[in-house]
Length: 355
Image (cartoon, rainbow, N blue to C red):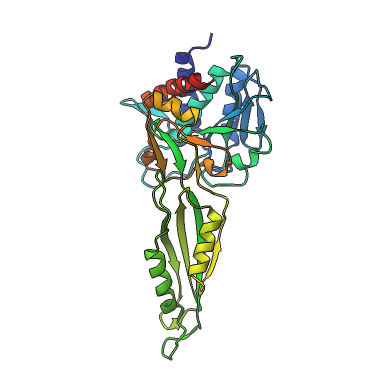
């Protein structure tokens, strides 16, 4: 008989193995194999598409709505601040250290344990689909976005990211713009009324000062930030152009296409190109049964400023998972073992209320 305690112990052991197995974005084959081994050990049929591993519950019924349980098994590369071996999964004072432990290994194994707990149960109100996805950290083409035509149609999703098991009912989208201000190149010793650097000043001032009108009750204001600038190669030559990068975190009051239109309208003297408009904001109604079940369990709702695989989903989605987002991508990353224990227990309690 599968118990929550045994599943929790197995999940922690899997997380240790995942930490010890490098899985940078687009290089996740070895960790995909570890997920396959989990399903094989519990005799659960599974599928693999590229480095994404997925499965459905045993009593899948096409007449019922489908709930996606998703988290990712890729990681960023370790930064130079690590004082511990990022691939050495070890426990100190209740903390499990290692790259990807918090983002998002703890969420991944907790959702996997939860899926396994419900796999054999019959007469559920929802079908369950689990996807351990690739390329989340790089927003690559072969991640969850590539699975949406492969897996059954989903009606609602839980995306596992570290939220301290609080309910992130909305998430900001992202548009990155490449902005170029063009001028006339020339020698610094000669007059030039079309200096690209000077022309760039009002563009930067507008980016700094512009305020988007629509305020979101969950996500606050749209945040626009100038993050990179590049121009010129030598002291005595006026450059032909100034190149800038602008990062815009979009609330749920705007579509990414609307943001593009606004930027291009207000910067007619610059060449403005969005890199992508696919990473939209996402949300779930506060009165959705999943959210109400979480509130009943004492969880709080909030809007998340960080981006996840929610951005590729068109259905309502809830971001929820063990761990703390502020630890993600930091040196000597860790997750508390008790966070995983609590995460699995709360996931199961939450789904028990709606399933």
